[in-house]
Length: 403
Image 1 (cartoon, helix red, strand yellow):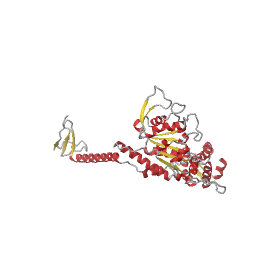
Image 2: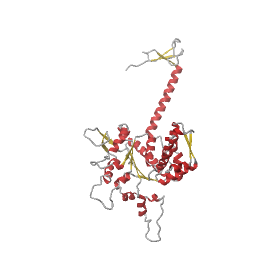
Image 3: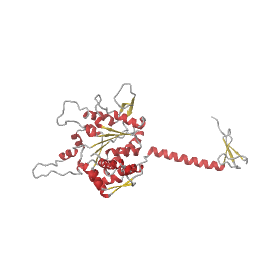
Image 4: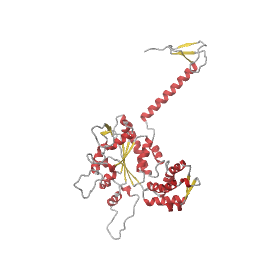
């Protein structure tokens, strides 16, 4: 290795290579090349290098030992996109934070069990929106799959391993990134065991068979999958993916679960004078995992989801907030689409109340609002060229005529 010598020259004819000014005190750096630096520039370079080295070492140390977000940061981000569901937001924010602490401790060879999440709620309450918002916040690949299309291996339909192939595709075939991704299994209640009271002789390939096949993936193991989505073929490329660090979120409406809780609590009493109890929105406070077993899920699958949260039905106030408050609210989306055509619209207070009332009657949650708004604005979009004014006023009378 060649050693370079540093010499101080007092020749005034030499010029600094940094500031390009003739100086008395010039240091020759690298004897083989004619490069000179004055004392002032050398001091500046030294301090800049020291600051840069200190900042990088601090940044690296922080990245290795501490997360850049907290449960409050996650909840604050979720508040921008999801209206209400405060209790569910807190539960999911803490579980996501603990999941990433688990990933960091895993690098230090400290084993902590994985905490998958099961979300129970009616349609339009925000189950899928939770998964999408978390994926956006964590900047990780997200695979959303429908459990209704899954069947046991060897039968017509998608194998359970195909959900990992979808995640790998979402990660642009980056295996390391896919092994830290998120999988959201929607409609998981549709794979419940069929004919619980009267079991059939035929094999339940889309119910209990799928539940049994999911156990291995949810727990965490090395699974051989094809890089292409579809049926298995000997010529397809096989990749081994480790599901130990993949976070699984599952959601379902679980229609009839409320009735199971009522029956377990013996709410319905025998007698002529006993009236049928009204629906109680706090009934899920008495929820137990055994209710899911009665519904049709096997105990082994429930054990893979240690965190279970329930999403309540939306109130009238929350319907109104969904129209205006979120970052990508419904009316903001239509505003942007109308501005593309250099148009705008105004909704009266009575018109907004009418939209909310009609959406609540549909009992579809936020999807009901999309259905009503799509019906209204589609007609206006079709006749945009015929409007003389750039601002359209939508009243309650107009909405009642359209819907």
